[in-house]
Image (tube, rainbow over all chains, first blue to last red; front, side):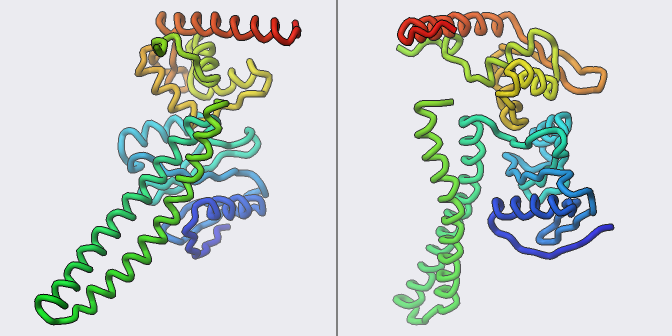
Length: 184
Length: 107
């Protein structure tokens, strides 16, 4: 039996936690597409789920090679959205952690940080362009371009939200680097 | 002066991967082998293992050794890889000798 749930979760860690809680109850994620989660009924706790951000799109040769490698270790990719992939592994074959040393954890967090920060910069550049258009209209043309100002406000708010997402991995990287001074 | 990369300390993951590859082995085989060698202490995550394998390939310390019967990609250590393991064992010996000397622990 398949069950479909619609949900929007912006924090991938919370999403991963939720998927594992569902799996523990016997509802295993089967496919995902923009907020639409489809679950299949399995025995409770059969799978462990991990959400991963690939460095390239899933269809690129690099990602295909990586996903194939994961498959050889019993990890199956059930869904992907852009560079995000939803991976699962049978719980009976032991713990499922993709990264087990500080080096690779930092690398993974950097990929995530860079993704968010790229969007933050884009937001702020477009916001600055809109602000310039508003000021130009106000001072030179003598017309208030409220639409531009509205865009500025929206983009800045969105930019700050994305900044919040980007700062989370950035903070974790900082604390891991401190640990790295004394251990591996 | 920093020592050449061949003489730099290896990570635990790199050391155990190199040791595993004295026999040709695929990714999952390495994970299992490392787990057994370390009596369950070291569990290599597939993401960590994949990154380490690619770096070791780039350095020429391991090479691709074709595919196994189950069509999984296999790897094997090279002569330069064996040399690196040799340096590491010398370094570990020094660490162990000094540790024993200072603490008086012999086993």
